[in-house]
Image (cartoon, rainbow, N blue to C red; front, side):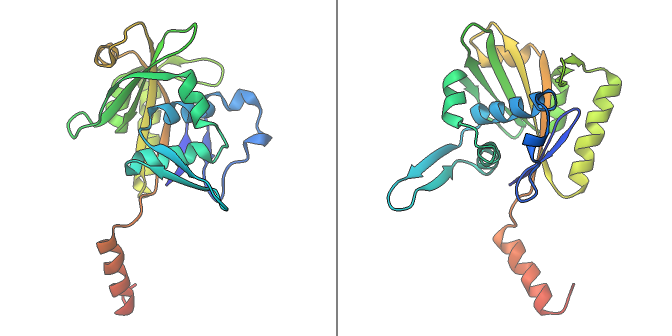
Length: 212
């Protein structure tokens, strides 16, 4: 479950205490809305709608991709529409060494778009700029340090952090787009993972034994 979306300038809560974006001006939402669109097209999760007396929505995919897509859907954004606008043409799956995944998309009248998401330290290493609400700016040593402190602080709260970045590119090869190392940081996604069954059972046993 995504609990927060953290951009270079703002933090947006997701879920029960969700930030009411209607109270914010468009000038404060650029990075946030772009992050959600990018998460929608970069996620491999799919939305299954079951019709009948009661319409039920089911999201299928791995844990991270499901959480990202659920966060997108909390904004009432149309996943289908953004996936049509940014059509995927190539992808690089995540692995244990690389620790990030990448997708490549075509857009009408614009350059192709490469989106990467994964371990914050790996994503930031590929970034040269960061998205701001008015414009992107160079990711210098000071800005890099601030972002590092942000995701480290989130991690100390017991949350998992996924970073997301993008790059405009002419190539149609996702691997080539990644090696260009010309990405712009967009946002961190803070995730609260569900307890594994064996961990939950251990906690319940401790409680029954009077251990707090």
